Amino acid sequence: MYVINFAMEMEKVGKAYFEKLADETSLTGVKNIFKMLATEQQKLYDIFKAIESNANTPLLVDSKALERAMDIFAQLFDEASKGILRSDLDAYEHAMKIEADIVKFFENMAQLETNQDAKTLLREISDEEKKVYNSIENIHDFVAAPKWNLESTEFSNLKEF
Image (cartoon, rainbow, N blue to C red):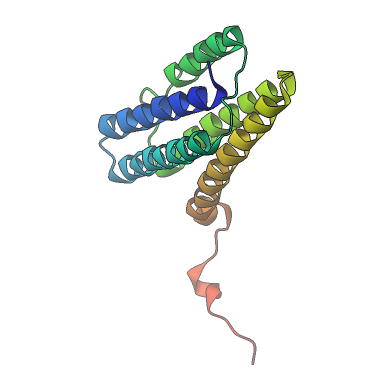
């Protein structure tokens, strides 16, 4: 199986997973988060599709390794939330965990790969996944800021004369 085709398939799985979570929740904020994440998965799919169309030669990775990888991804998405997502923060933390696992997976695949072209492509895929992780983390930190930095409104507008 081609590396890029595998990556595109994983983005399809991720998109379907986040759409399913969005459909299963009744919380508007959490629903919007998962819809946004599904959109991010589609954007990554489009990026990988562009890489595929610009590639000079198809890049192969051992199909046995990719078959095992499909099982790993299936487990990752099967261990889903099932009622534990009660707030926006829970949803972001869940998404961050998934993205971190995906980044680690592609980094490990790149280290194990012997074909230099495939190794390069796996690193590119990992870098794109890191961008998604960083976006989710930044939003999470923004949403969590009031929990972390509690300030009293009584003292927030004080200025020195």
